[in-house]
Amino acid sequence: MSRICVVGAGPKAAALAARAAVLRQKGVKVPEIVIIEKIGIGAAWSGVGGFSNGRLTLCSPAEKDVGFPYVDMIRRHGFAVSHEVFKRFSWSSYQVAVGAFAEWVDRGRSHPSHLGWSEYLSWVFEQAEQGVETGVVTNVTRTKSGWKVNYETDDGSEALIADGVVFTGVGDPRRVREIGDIPSDRIYDPKSFWENTSFFKTLPDETRIVVVGDGGAAGAIVAWLSQALADTNVAISSVSPLGTLLPRGDGYAERRWFSDPADWKDLSIEHRQTLLKRTEAGVISLRNKSIIDASYRVEYVLGKATEVTWEADAFGEELTVHVDYLDDRTPVKADYLINGMGFDPWSQLEMVSHPLATLFRHGKLRSEAEAGMRDDLTFPVLKSPTGKDLEMPKLHIPAMASLAQGPGMGTLGCLGLVAAAILDPYTK
Ligand SMILES: Cc1cc2nc3c(=O)[nH]c(=O)nc-3n(C[C@H](O)[C@H](O)[C@H](O)COP(=O)(O)OP(=O)(O)OC[C@H]3O[C@@H](n4cnc5c(N)ncnc54)[C@H](O)[C@@H]3O)c2cc1C
Image 1 (spheres, rainbow, N blue to C red):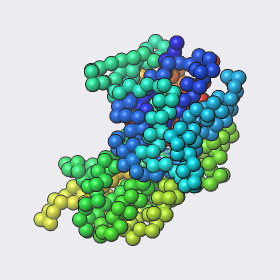
Image 2: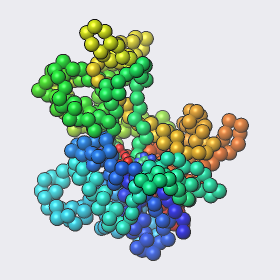
Image 3: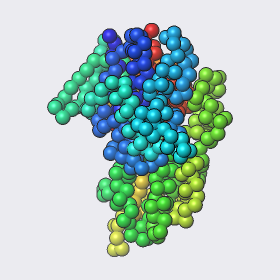
Image 4: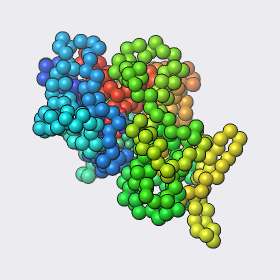
């Protein structure tokens, strides 16, 4: 039997576990799925692993659950897989199972908290009888026909062989370049910020916080700060290339691409990038936008933060965030800097030993790789600088597949499609 190793026990892993459980129950030969998670199930949502304090509200509706959009584009298995996934694993089934369905409906089918979402993910793994191993994947090396996955557990180093590996998550947070010896408690990112929200609530008046970035991570942080510090004189500066936090295009015309990307590939790459910008990168949720717009604490700074320096003088110590726009450089003084410039999915390739990964690390072939991500969310065959064809064993990276395969592949936009894209080719 073949085996897939999934790195991380978040929504993507839950979607794979749910689909595999349904296919298996119907007698379809499905690969063994081994999930390795470094912190715990739904760690990016529960509040224990950073990225959230658990009390934030999910921007996506709960119905965008592990089987959404519940269409089987290819009815290869002779039965409606999505119907079975809906019955066993949907958010609605979960609400029924925990006796909360009527209340959820009566409350207007509210969006769940991040903690509530992580509890749902735990339920999915349980229903699917899918185990999750605790361990940190440190490196992935190729074998003759697949991968050797090396990971660290409390009991020491372990390794397993897999035909395919799935990287979930979003990669490392991007950071403004730090010059000099800046104390670590002055600079935060979307992971460390949410682990330290109680500290930010105690800041004295006249403190200045600079939040860099214009996407969902920055939006969530600025919205939280503007509510938590509403009755103080703490200043929040939002630095972004347009000096504006733009709302996500979130109507039917945009969402339909996530649920049914069948004609996504008919769009030019340029137009796909435009749609991704309107819906994913560099936009914030309407909910956070209205909170931020109502705040008197937030001021906007136009430009890209390129460097941060640390200066101490007779009056104290301060950060200076250097913000560039056209030919001008503006120094913005701050007590704290929060990097909210999104995440670098390429950072996940640091763990991979393969000639293509080495080229990606040197910044080579990246746009060709992204534009050519295959239907099963793996890299295409690419030409090395010496003209040699390079192909990896199956390394599925949904976070890199939006441009090629559809805008929801990296998010919660279409978890059911992501699971089908990865899993179904193994069942042929
Ligand atoms: C504040 C915030 C709110 C968001 N809200 C939404 C939203 O409402 N809708 C939406 O579509 N998207 C949202 N996003 C984007 C969201 O992060 C992605 O959609 C989500 O990460 C996709 O789930 P996933 O399963 O790929 O990854 P994750 O849920 O991030 O899971 C990855 C897991 O991998 C584990 N891990 C990482 N490295 C290793 C390793 N080396 N070894 C073992 N385990 C490892 C982590 O601990 C983590 O549990 C939000 C992001 C943030 C920061």
